[in-house]
Image 1 (cartoon, rainbow, N blue to C red):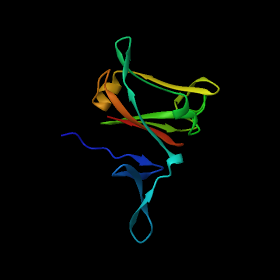
Image 2: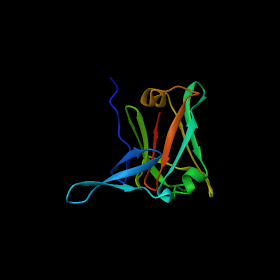
Image 3: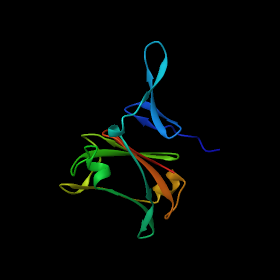
Length: 137
């Protein structure tokens, strides 16, 4: 059975309540839920493609730049069963490609298929914030 992964924003658990997303906050007296401001995240979908026989995920433009992801920024890629996460890290192994004003993150590997349990042509959900980008089916 596939282990369900939870989404997080700045280390806080993201929960879907109807059509809204909220984060779990520890108040000191217990846990509470706080609404996520629309400006803090962008939720969209992308279709997985293929290039040279490998699965490809291409992100560019506003989904990145509106959250402060710019050409040259460094990040790490974390792939856990069912979830792909790009986490900003000044010493990260990868960097955002593209030209100023048009940042690009291009991931082209069969690890995408195995991690996301998806294949080229499948649609995945993408949640972008200032600190990370989370992708899952």
